[in-house]
Image 1 (cartoon, rainbow, N blue to C red):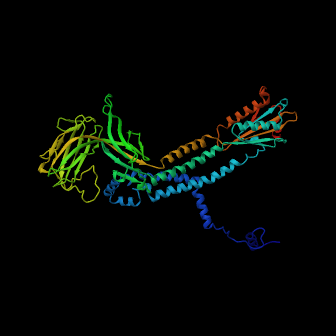
Image 2 (cartoon, rainbow, N blue to C red; image 1 turned 180 degrees about the vertical axis):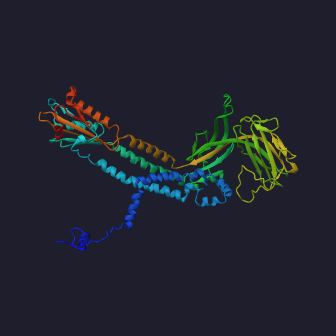
Length: 575
């Protein structure tokens, strides 16, 4: 009976085993909202995503080194915005000047945190189950394993198959294997062994420690703070907000966190090289003698602050980051009154401590006064009559200044840089190109300003130090977790995951036929050495004092398999 083309089409459209026409288009199951969430969670918590986020976090931190950061130096950011009126505001909207507290950097940080947790927790649960489980069953054909060997125990040794497996279990256990003895009294006893769980444990410890580092860094960013203070000899710094020159608090900083300790700089000494011709005048040692008090009511303590040797006080670390000279000057105004008196911090510019100096006297009357110039610890005149510094020690100190009068702009409530003087709108009194010439002073000398504007005297020299105060409650935790992470990484790299099996059978002539095999999880270049070590221990246990050469047939070594002498390959595998 024949079918028409229409009948054939109908037959093709029908599914086998159905009585009616099948649907011409397959209907795929809908993923649904819950399925989408499950898929997104699996993508986020995969190791590939965690590594990508870690790389992305490193890339996202790059703008922090390319653009000035507002928490570190707000004045530089303000100047950058003035110098770049077009791109500056757009960069500010993108939070390029607050990279590490920006929304997009925080989002990457939080996603990495969630990804690591979601990746580590399931793996830790699976690893815990694997550690409690028994070693895998003994393969049927051990000869297929990468490392395989056989031993023949002579009948006169009196070692049964069960005894041989008990001995093998004991030997493997001594080598750190987790051992299971199977069918010890049966016809085909065997031993399954496994070791190297510390490898996966080290991997988990490494990733868990990364989470700990992230948490510690977050704690430091939330509750830590840093501040800077310039301290002249004889001055005291008290750990309060008003006593800092600059202060950078954490996101959740509370002023109550500040411990009311105090630090007084008694003396600062610098040792310069005076013997080496090639390094003459270079600093060898910086030594700041401090008097500290942990609280207003505690006793004073003498401490020494050096470079890379901070002083710990009130939970903070105080670092020595700079030093210089602070000439002591007295400025009298046009009315003869003292308008300013004390040390003025100068900024070193070279190895001879040639230092820039700015003096602002807003209390002078009838006009405010300002001075700019430089300080030379050891001044020498060249052939043109220009002074320059020749030595960092104050052997011939000299103060060179130009003076101005007018409105300094300090009464408008706007912050000004204490190390610069805006001379716009000021009238110059002294200068090299003016009839009055520049002001040149040595210690103990004074100079009367033109037009009856007052006078300035150079009274002496003091030294100062620049201190950096850091409080980071997560610093210790970050260090501990980083060390644990390194230990976990080393364990995961150098510890091998291995499995070993040993099986025994009895030959009809009474000999005990033993075969063993080893398998590594992943590449293990030391697996052959492990197989040789296990074989040596087994031979020592059963064949000590016998000629072991008769138990192996070197000529029958094929594809990594060794066949016992006096027996065929099939008889060994069947036992």
